[in-house]
Image (cartoon, rainbow, N blue to C red; front, side):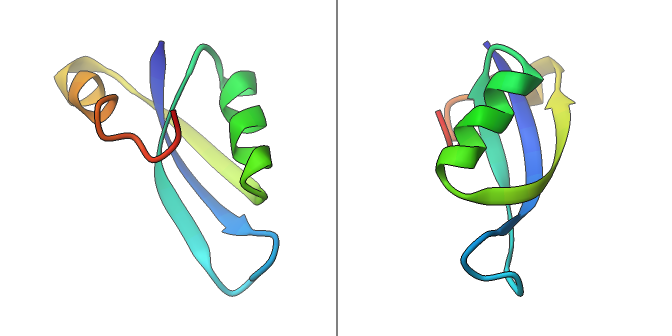
Amino acid sequence: MAVYHYTGVLATDHDRIESGAVVADSEEAALEKLRKYRVEEVKLKKVVGPSGFFMGFTANVK
């Protein structure tokens, strides 16, 4: 499982920017998980190395 850092806008409140980490197999799976929480206009960046490993434990979306 990879960890992705995301930034997006909530569909219910377009003035609010949401960011955090999501654990998923691929970028497509990460986008699907974020769609369930109604996050739109998502930008993803894969987190690698030790910081990605530890961020997987505290991810916002698993």
